[in-house]
Image (cartoon, rainbow, N blue to C red; front, side):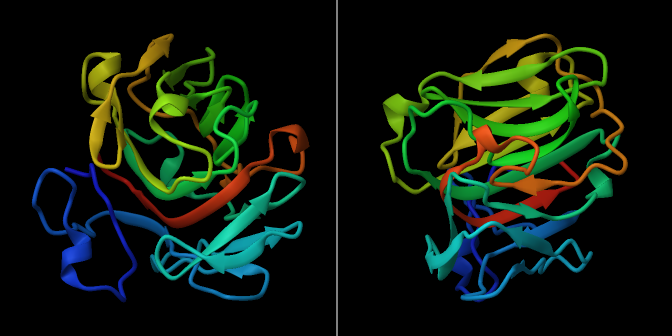
Length: 232
């Protein structure tokens, strides 16, 4: 199971316990791990071993994070380009998890995670007007999920952990796509049917915190300890 709270490899084993499950952290099928450990420079290194280092654009700043360091995005053109993370293309399962703290949880759409060719062909995590939403497109329809209690349970600037778990082998929206906040599963609403596999996003980069082509949706806040797995 991937419903997890994770920390950097430098910390003790107690930091690798899954919230509510008491299991040691499982590194199987790791695609990407960006702990934002750097304190300077324009590269967020991938410690997952596949070379998906993130090129930093704009002027985000290195600051103290949830664990060690983090990257602070100012909402005006900052983003990290990790290149085409190919394991997310036509994928039957994935888990994305990270620590984040948004400056204003009621702000209009801000991209935290984005791998997107168009509105129907995408994987995103997007806080929007007090909701925490996202997309898992099939290349045909605009399919998204939404947690409506985001601004009720999370305060401005508060660190929290989010895990998105996609399992296309399941039969319903609620079992194919799950969200965990600080290790606790939350109830989602859905538009459309979550597909059995993600769209073919070959050649499309994975971005963190925004993109050059969507400046109005740039993220303002902190990101730390991003993990992506090719399993649910």
